[in-house]
Length: 121
Image (cartoon, rainbow, N blue to C red; front, side, top):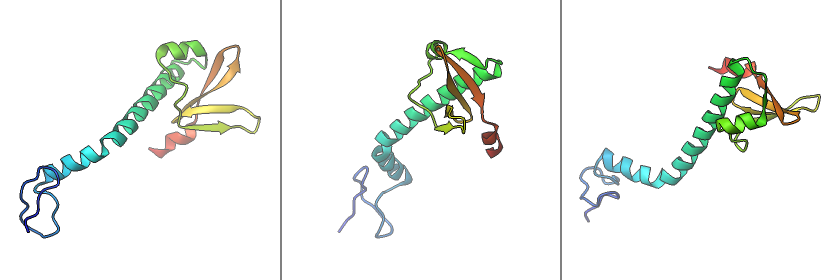
């Protein structure tokens, strides 16, 4: 019984448990299987990186308070963040990696950097 490659259908030579005729076919097959999941993860990661960059740029410019609309204009997506921290004082910070913000009232938000995450490099 001749075995066929799962990707291209060519004959397989060698070990009896081989499923692919080459590394390229194995990679093609697995990439095709994981394409949808990989695209979702890649898109979400891109949004998180963009949000982080926007917060980092504003924070590093020394802007600790900014209007919510300014973030929206820069392309910040408020639906994507990495984690939430609630302080003992009842304040809620939304973080995108080490940069975060909290609602400060009147449409303004207060930016913050959590230096605890800078030590994980």
